[in-house]
Image 1 (cartoon, rainbow, N blue to C red):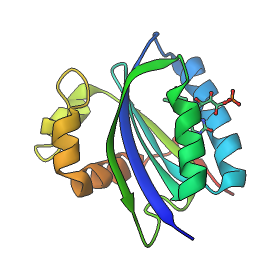
Image 2: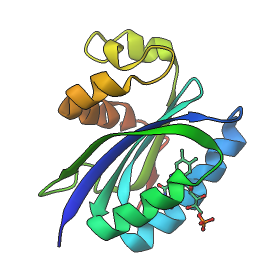
Image 3: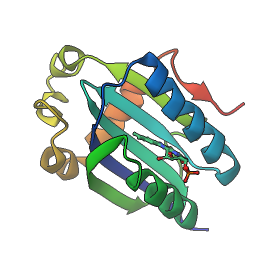
Length: 146
Ligand SMILES: Cc1cc2nc3c(=O)[nH]c(=O)nc-3n(C[C@H](O)[C@H](O)[C@H](O)COP(=O)(O)O)c2cc1C
């Protein structure tokens, strides 16, 4: 079994209100659960950042579906790495919408956002990017596996 973690960023193609985001989250967690794909989706001012983790084939299939989704564009992969254990094992897909000010007020994470997520800076510090996803994921908005 080969476990991988993949992080990408993207830009929303439409205004995402609560209903539209809930719709994405529902289809995500429904599909991820049977495939044992776990992760976290962050939404900030029209931009997405998502980490997917699970068995290599399941993550590739999920990422390829997500890449074809017209609800977002400019998809950039910032990390793809083999891992020995999951960081988001308890979520079929956690979710959090944050304001840019929330992100920029934390000095360690501020370089990661400049109108949109900054691929180069995220890719240069992937462990910090993962830490940020975990940090912001600790809210009451996540959709849990059980
Ligand atoms: C930002 C974003 C994140 C998404 N995350 C997931 C996900 O984690 N898992 C998933 O199965 N679908 C996710 N989706 C939805 C997929 O793109 C796709 O609509 C869904 O899997 C249904 O695919 P199908 O119509 O080919 O069956 C996401 C879509 C967007 C826009």
